Length: 148
Image (cartoon, rainbow, N blue to C red):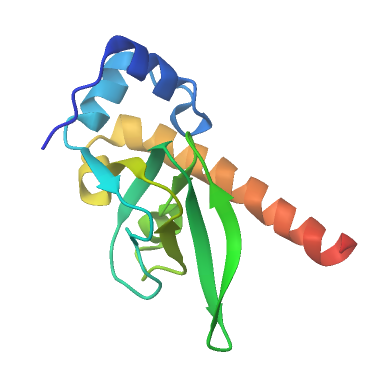
């Protein structure tokens, strides 16, 4: 199912760091095969250990990332509108490293990794933006470890 967005929605998405340097026609091509996903509070769009390569963007609501450690689910981070998750499995082609749960009712945009790579000119920009995002997260984690 393709996603039909109003012009103002495209403008909003184009302001996200994830879509930096993409223009509206490129974003429209990327979203042609995307899906809108509704999640109720408590739903898990992805679970740790699952095989999947979808990238999700939070359009509304709040999501929480959880990681299992010593048999206990630990909260890693909460995400809100404009933030994304699922990028690690998209890049690595490995199983999910964490679970993501809807804290509130959420609307998500789901992009299929297999569809993304069909457009090399667009996917190169998207992957560069994801690399920047992952670098920021790694820097933050390093600061937490060294500075406490």
